[in-house]
Image (cartoon, rainbow over all chains, first blue to last red; front, side, top):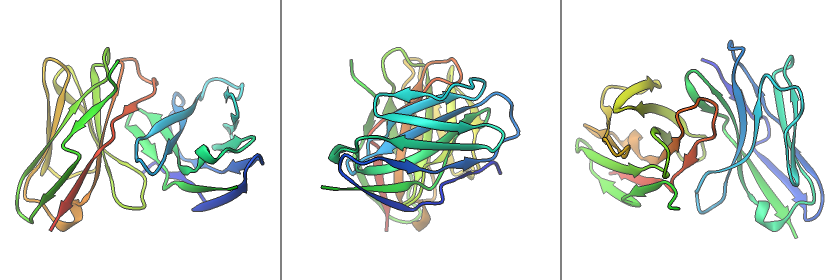
Length: 112
Length: 113
């Protein structure tokens, strides 16, 4: 089975600080996509950021950016200027021919 | 523009019963995927429907079946419910083009007693 691994079950960061969530994945495909999804306590899954594997440039969306290392199969998420509304479960997700594969998630706590 | 909607919000069933969950995709989307999310876990892919056919399937038994209607809405059916089927069931829709993000609904919380 092709897996997605998030090694940090929980992370805590002070408001306004920067935090990085780690993710590694396994795939035999050359054409695939990577996503970070956020799931707040309300449980609605929301897309945070998207990366096409064929693009070398790291994706950025406002305060959110990724460090995509294709050879290492690593896809970390950096959140700058953390805000209380960023508190949620974050799922690293690989999209390929077999649909979306999710990691187990990282619970992000924002300390005021 | 309504996003992905799911019904019901919560459902309680007993072992051995059958359940049907419903999903309406986001406007303009014709592909619907279903996921099972156990407590404290990431979602697991059940199957995907496109053009009223099951296109892809995850590692779930035949007790899990689905349907897609001409208006792109979809149903997930689970027969012979087990305690282990208790979970949040998420529906997601996407445009046809592969690689586009999937938009998720709020989910249906199924409890099997």
